[in-house]
Length: 221
Ligand SMILES: N[C@@H](CCC(=O)N[C@@H](CS)C(=O)NCC(=O)O)C(=O)O
Image 1 (cartoon, helix red, strand yellow):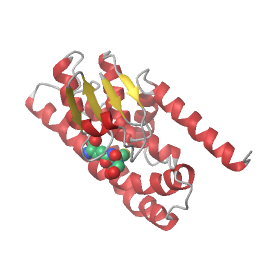
Image 2 (cartoon, rainbow, N blue to C red):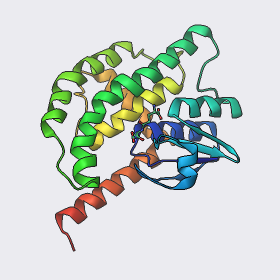
Image 3 (tube, rainbow, N blue to C red):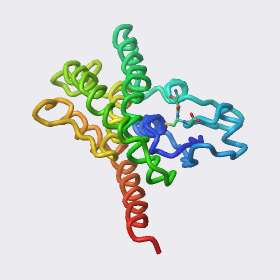
């Protein structure tokens, strides 16, 4: 099974973490945005990452890919069977993909993607505004919803935890870390999630990559 897309994308990171938690063997092809790779474009007709290929079967969209993985490899379940837990898991995935990533993406794009990867200035005012105005209600919501178990749904690891944890990596790359005093549950949740063997190597590789680009930008050969 091939997954196309660089893990700097919160959506790509999400599907690779789900695959790792399930023990699914995937080959990661870290293509970047705008790739014209014909195999990737056949799997993702609108050019968005992630996309998947499994033999002749192709699919795009992180949530669709997670549902496919869940059907191919049901255990361990990342989408609970019980009606309410299942529905809440889908909600958290949707919340992360749309509300959370929409806000965090303004920060990550303008502070990291534009200056480091696209070599052009980002819109710092837009990033600052998103950090000041859009993030606090999102953080407050997640803080309020996190139970003592540290898992968003059903006291066990689900897609909900993975989807909501993933954009925190992008925020950290952009220098945004929720205040531990204001958000103690988020702080513990993010630390626990990113320490998992499914997340940790991806995040470490991203940090190395970004540090390398920052260093070469600071001292061009
Ligand atoms: N709903 C999609 C969103 C995918 C998406 O927007 N990915 C971004 C990267 S984070 C992308 O490919 N952007 C390129 C573009 O829109 O052309 C998913 O969950 O996979």
